[in-house]
Amino acid sequence: MRTKHVNVLIALAAFVLFSFSCFCISRMTQTSNQLINCRNHILEFKEKILRLKNKTERNRQELINALSKMKYEMTQRENTSTDLVEKKMNTLGKDETVSNNTFEVLKFFFPHLRKVGRIYPDVIIGKEKTGVSFALGISTVSRGNQSYLKQTLNSVVSRMTLSEEKDSVVIVSVADRNEDYLKSVVDMITKRFKRQLKSGSLEVISIPAFFYPNMLHIKQSTEDSGKLESWRIKQVLDFCFLMLYAQPKAMYYLQLEDDIIAKKRYFTKITDFVHNITSNNWFYIEFSILGFIAVNFAPNSLLPQRNEVTYFVPWIRTTEDKPIDLLLGDIFQVKMCNPGETPEKCAERNKQIRIRYKPSLFQHVGIQSSFSGREQYSKDIYY
Image (cartoon, rainbow, N blue to C red):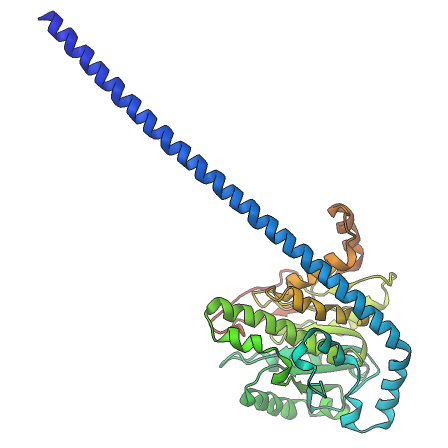
């Protein structure tokens, strides 16, 4: 009897050991498969990183080559084009004065414009004021039933002194094909800012639809991801066109959003700060911490030196899918950081040429984004 019980116990123990062995083998097999899958994911990730690195390097080389060619062409024309433009501004009619070389650089990067004779925004209202210290650019598009432009202009224009107003020009660029929106902007400005329009310190321009590549219209009709990419590309183009228009007008260019408010005496503080900078090598100055025009539509006050404006144009062709605030960082990386240079050295130079003014002089107030259906609530904590 005892022997029978022992045999049963031995059989039970053997069964338990067998079951445990099977379980262990099964778990080891699963773990092995998971490790293999993990390794495959890591290898796939490495391949993606490598492709991204190669693409970035190609874009960088393309940009360097494009900039070198553009610099050479600009240097060749510098002595003659300046005198020619000034002569036209003084002696020729309106249609001729606007046909300067400022927008001709677009033909180099946008083949669809090479067949167009006259490339220039439509000047809706304004005296095309030039020879001032500061040009303030505000690009605006329809946000449906919501608009912040009137509040922005009231804040920006009313907080200038008469002498500051005389030495500046505020440019409102309507970058929207909606004619009703253009009409509403013109009606609002002509009613509320008559004195500034009469003096030439405020003007309104409209960007023609043919300025934009056909790819924008194609992407806008596809899925949401294509619409977002198209929207980003158009934003970069909107700002670029406005910068090019403002470039011959002033020594410095101040980029503003159409949904911000300015602090009292903001313009006095900007001019004092710029004139007291001892270095001549600064790249740009930020008067808000929220960036240029981030995906959350943060406002920015960017003051690039006049000859830096054209650096935005070639980047449109090599980094089309990036928001403009990230684009600005890429421009700095290529323009200011030497190949093979350590990040620490580049960051140290960054502090000297990318200047941030505190406290911030502008606050973001808009909620409704120009990208349909999106809202954002970003605020500048240093304002």
